[in-house]
Amino acid sequence: MQRMSFTIAENMQSRPLVVVGAGTLGRRIALVQASTGEEVRLVDRSKQALQEAKAFIESTLPGIVATRGGQVGEVLYTDDLPSALQSAWLVTEALPEKLDLKQELFAELDRLAPADAILASNSSSYPSSELVGRVSRRERVVNTHYYMPPEVNALEIMSCGYTDPAVIELLLQRLPAYGLVPFHVQRESVGFIYNRIWAAIKREALAVVAEGVSSPQEVDRIFSAVLRAPVGPFQLMDRVGLDVVLDIENHYAAIQPGLPVSPRHLLDEYVRNNWLGVKTGKGFYNYEKS
Image 1 (spheres, rainbow, N blue to C red):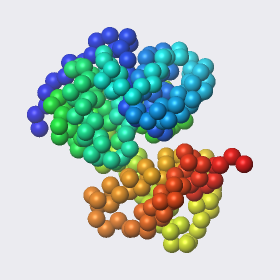
Image 2: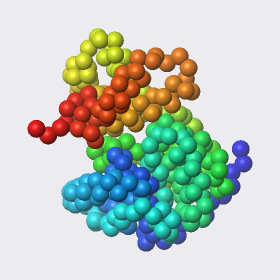
Image 3: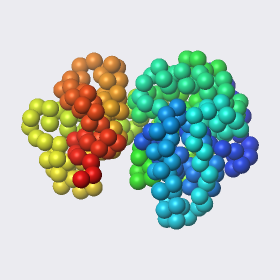
């Protein structure tokens, strides 16, 4: 596969970073990026999402900087994507796991972002090769898959198949400055490294509950007791958002025929009732304030 070379951005320290999508992960990505004194522009069409992201970042960022050292950066909250992209050196997509939304956004980013801006996807289940159909400069597109920063600082970096190796090398060197630990996924993998392993754990945990073998709480208790893990799979799914978990499971099912349906049926029941986890106050656990 022929790759084109990419011109690495200059003066990155004085140029902003952009995160598109102010949801659970988008606001956390913006948070860690703003922890070294740089300007971050967080973009979302939803004013409510931007307001919630602003409250989260403003309350959390000073503590992150105090713990790690660094400097509080400036975060701009906006619904104006073209303006936000001006002079950016790194643009990170953090939209819901909907392929058409991501493909449309990357076509826009390719058209509007500076020619030397890296275009990164935070998708949990879509490799970036599926997002570049309408992208003319594919050598600058890459997966940067975050988990739940700042608590979980692992970050997976994977080529779209066209990515200039210099882009990956730059991110491997630069992203640790934000308190992140990058891992290079050496060939395209749906689910990257950790999520392939996590998907099997998550799916079987859901099946155990769907079949009436146990409850979410008991599964988490035994998981933590055996593995000494601080939280169990159902607590983690609640943090991610059960709508996001269902989107990911639906995608896996589309590309891997024969996966059991009971985990998706259980998730669908919760999503239809708007029991999405922490963000709605109720999921497998109840988070509503009394």
